[in-house]
Image (cartoon, rainbow, N blue to C red):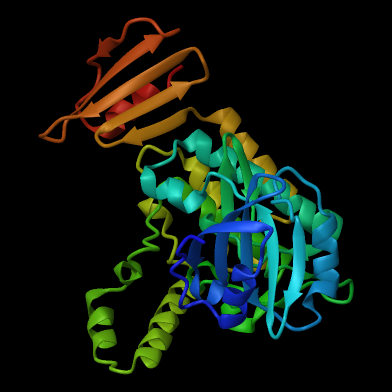
Length: 363
């Protein structure tokens, strides 16, 4: 058996993995409070799978949510091969293994605006299936839980789903990563259908290049806050104080600051995000279909923006495209080509990006 380096995993899970003779496990990924993940290959079926383990009550695999999840079949929701309880206090589900997740893609390089919108549209199609057909909320939508395969985007990690009953329009909040908690979850421990839409809004914000330093979260804090935090010696208390600081920003609506979006994005992007990220859940999009319609509107209305380093590419459908470059002195130049022909320089600008963008709005 391949050395998995999973000494930190709970013993019941490690024993299960080592005594499972139907799967050759090849990799272990620890996700802290979000569970333990193993990747492997099913020997008889010869396909790659992921096993996700997490804390659960003994009746979880027979709960209403688990039964529903077994029967969901939608191209934008990760298919469940198996969902079972593992004594004494774990559950696990088995899914296909896809090529990468959205967080990995974001870290490799900024997505084009069109790709970000297409991924968001796929997510919203999956959310619509959960909400409208099954009355389920995901409660943990974030880039690591969106898997990408070729041009398909799939919602994964369904361990936190809850069914919203007809008697009330919310469930309790999950213990998800604090950065993605909507304001109502922090203030009232409530989670609505619109809370999922808030999390989708954060995913779109990140995908478009907004400031969201998930790997260096202290960057969200001011120098004064970092100094205050450094004076707290107890690790648990320090984490609690950090979570409180982040929660305060979420409640003020400043954690995802729309002013940090790339300068080239049109105002329509900010308007859609502002609606999705409203502090008051009742002022967000009414449902995922309304949000999806707004996303499709952005796709139809605006060109595709793609920036790598000091080069910005702006594509209008299949007909015309602009290529803007920034030199060492910070001045911009721009070229245009039509139908894939030769690039031609345009000098009708003052060297600033705002001036360049006015030219590039024209098809």
